[in-house]
Image (tube, rainbow, N blue to C red; front, side, top):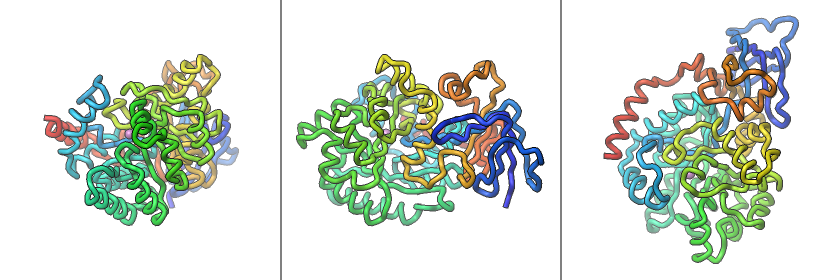
Amino acid sequence: MERILIRADYLLPGGENWDTIRDAELLIEGEVVSYLGTRREHPIGGVDRIIEGKNKLVMPGLINTHTHAAMTLFRGYADDLPLMNWLEQKIWPAEARLNKDDIYWGTMLAICEMIRGGTTCFADMYFHMGEVARACLESGIRASLAHGLIGIDGPQESEKSLQVSRELVSDWHGAGDGLITVMLGPHAPYTCPPQYLEKVMTVAGDLKVPIHIHLAETRGEVEECLNKWGKRPIELMDSIGLFANQVLAAHCVHLSEDEIEMLVKKQVSVAHNPGSNLKLGSGIAPLADLLEQGALVSLGTDGAASNNNLDMIEEMRLAAILAKGFRENPTVIPARDALKMATRNGARSLFLQDGLGMLRVGSPADLIILDLNKPHFHPFHDLCAHIVYAAAAADVEFVMVKGRILMEQRKLLTIDEEKVLQEANERAIRLTR
Ligand code: NI
């Protein structure tokens, strides 16, 4: 078993309090953290590698709980359009041309970007998810994958895509010794009517996997839902018993008081996507209300066609400053809460193992190192505030997942990045021609 020792000037183990450990060392044995704390007087012996972290900060890897990775191929292809035009005239026709290889390379492009920005785990919902799983295993990034289910294309198609989901679970759930997990991915209430969702719930129950769904993203969705079913989206989901399953709900922008209470009571995980919600003009989610009432909220970037990057540091900053502006109150969502949403809450939102999303003895070694030797980190008044309000993705210089080093000195070690960029560019041109 390989033993890697990281010495760093600063360590943020994360979890609840985000206290800093100075002159820290952290020992990784195989896939897990086996020691962390202040540097011991007697040096730890018998290690295979020592990583020196002068002016460096070690912290848990970031967890992106909602994206559509291969949509990187459509980054910058269609912007500044009304949501329905964007989908119907641009995105859906281009998506119809996607083949398996496109998904693989588009996902690889996303993974390059995510690793470079300190993301060590992501939740994806898209198509040809076996290709996504393959890209994750090869690159070493952790992921929770869902095949996007649509329930309005006729009974045959609907049943077929449920079968694809069942196969995804049997082929990939737990693959890579737990690196990959699988969820069921009913797209949204407006593409999956209650009758169909009930089938999805049955399959999720049988296979014991969580559900990943878009909920209450736009005002239009809420109005349509009220017209069609006489209930708002969260109310409708509650009435059919969806929340008896483990559910990850992306967006939750337009919520009534009662719906917030339902999300809290039923322990639904909310993936907040401030960047996408802003850019698509969907609105601003009531983040402070959700957190104050005890909801479990994590952060997502959504796809690169609606953000347009997969930068979780930016997402932390947006979440914190938007909530302050929205409430006209600078005390809501302090930096430590934003960090917690992007790490520990992310792991909990994806129903992943204990100890993930923070650094403890026994935690999976999913961690990142930031280079603090840059003007925008000085002076060192408060490193948590610096990460949320001053840092950039490019400050991440080292990434480890499950004890495997994915990036060192900003060089990707598991991916041929040049090849990925070339493939992605060629494919994007074909898809959008
Ligand atoms: Ni989405």
